[in-house]
Image (cartoon, rainbow, N blue to C red; front, top):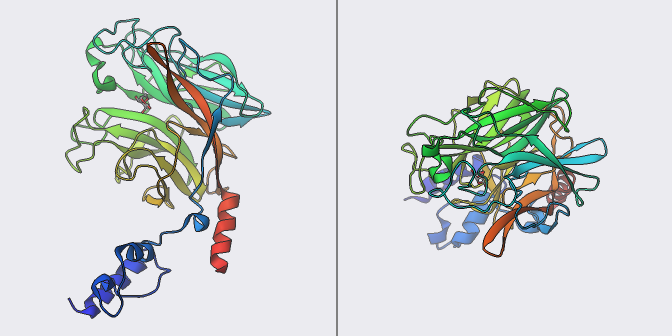
Length: 389
Ligand code: AAL
């Protein structure tokens, strides 16, 4: 190939994004005049950044969420984002009945649990400082027998809009034939709303989001609803899987991925993006608004342990790799759910996540706190500093 061809190719690549790099031929790794290693070429062409110049890089610290910690016989998992109302922080989470170990799918019954989240309701807790929590009790219970949410309501997230509180969550029915592989084919997204974070909660009678058709990435599961308000709409990010542990969707071969759906009102109707899936990987969906865009943590898949960012909320790029990111986290968002058209996303500095530990023969989930610095304020400082150099 002529060096002219390569130069043209490189200029095209550079203009697509990574721009601020020296203009050298793309193939210079093999070019005797301009030798360059593969590492240097990636650094230059992808616009990679060292930690100190990278607003998306952070260390993580982990500490107890006092009051919601490890307790024999009790499981608390999959916390929502944390919100502040008046002087108190609020969090909601999955909580199955106390004292019941998990027996597995085969032995599960109307009262014995197949999974750590089986037979769960949604509970909540409050805290004056985000460190010391008081469990307040039940928020949303499973639906009536025979309904789409009668077996369990689990893995919630919170949205504050129009002076109301909305809890979105996974919901499974009590069909005994449909417990296998984490309720594959038997899970939808449900919703309940309240005028106060302390309830009472009104159950929306229908599901808010359904699984996709056969062959789509979200055919068997729609999981982990997480909401952001941007461009005057409600953006519901969620995780989907096409089938059992080894199955992949027919179109792209993706075994687990995230999608997004949009609505004009919190209760929908939600329309799935034509670009879905928008993130390749899993496991829990953790997203938050940052500047005008959206950030996400990834703990599974080809870009495992990365922090991703999409200016348009759809076309994500990994911005920092190898992070010690918390699993199944809910982040505290300053400004709660202000539309990013009105106020840029402020980033995050802490949240809650779940861990699990064994006591005797059984394992129990509990909540922990993480701290990091992915705030907009620090991000702006790093960007300004980088521009001066
Ligand atoms: C979680 C989530 C969903 C799954 C299970 C409970 O971490 O991805 O909620 O169903 O595991």
